[in-house]
Length: 187
Image (cartoon, rainbow, N blue to C red; front, side):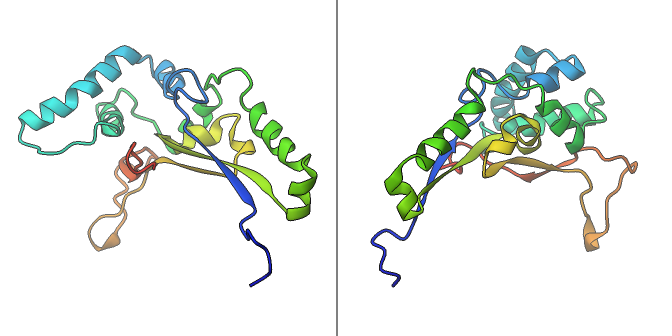
């Protein structure tokens, strides 16, 4: 025992992204880039669960259905060249609420200005937990101000039987889900 009453000295602030740090959905720059009507995309996505259940599927993830639908857009050629690098690039176009990302540094500064906190080594860290897209968050202006991000990721070069690369046409294009967070797993 080190003698400290409270050995944990980090205050972690957890943030959602869509409709929290930004007023809408982070995918808006993606839709704009490809000329996709966002209302149509989300209406299609919202209708998919019922369609798949009518086809005999018992359970679907409403929160992440959009990820598979985005992959369908890639497979159909609408977003045929979409890859992780482009997602990160498009993240720079995410419109944030006024005061974001400045709020991250302002909150950390509040902690640094508390004499008792300094004496005890207390600090503030920021983390984003989102069922949005990791690469877009990392391309946004908040990325350099946060200490960690958990969000959905895509695989560009999946491996098949025998762990042989399934390179397809050799182009780096998102092809499979790599990491998925929904509203339940965020907690």
